[in-house]
Amino acid sequence: MNGTTAAPNGIDREALDATIAAVRAQPELAQVTFTLDADWKSGCHQRATTGELRQAGAPVETRTSRYVLESDEPAALLGTDHAASPAEYILQALAGCYSVTFAANATVRGIELSSLRLELEADFDLQAFLGLDNDARPGAREIRVTVHAESPSATRQQLQELTEAVQRRSPIRDTLAGPVQVTTILAES
Image (tube, rainbow, N blue to C red; front, side, top):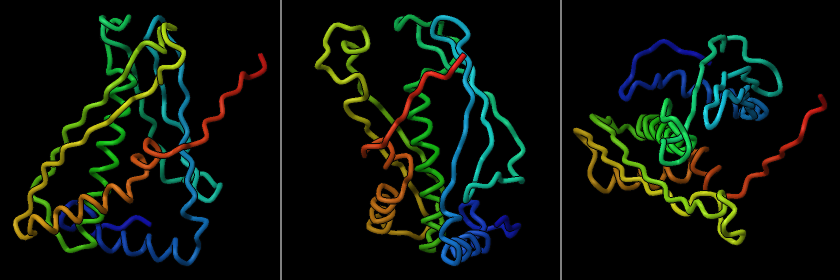
């Protein structure tokens, strides 16, 4: 499902159409699993490496690259500020997913994007994390995204409809906005 034809928005329309057709014919291809292996270094510093990508339960052989992601916290939050914080990675994940979803959906709609910039903010209350308020939610209270999208041919209404479609179709937004089961187990030593 990898094409080579260049297209507006950096999305290969033929490859996108082939992917849609393949998933329509074999719905199990829509089932993907991302993996990551993380090691705590010290304090708030952690290093993670991306792992195998599986589609329909089988390893994706064309995904051979591995990426190293480091996280830390700002000094004001007990860290050494040597890397982005986990909260910033959440915002980056949403921004990355929104960008892909914008580009793909714009391409399907025949909208050429000349620019796309996203401003993201997340609000946290650290009282639960610090053990000061067991009733406080430890996660983000609100995430705000401001979209700056420009197109040489689309109307503001078309860009608004595209923005609404992106909100409905973004896997990362859905993960953040809706309940998702997170299972945590302690491995045997």
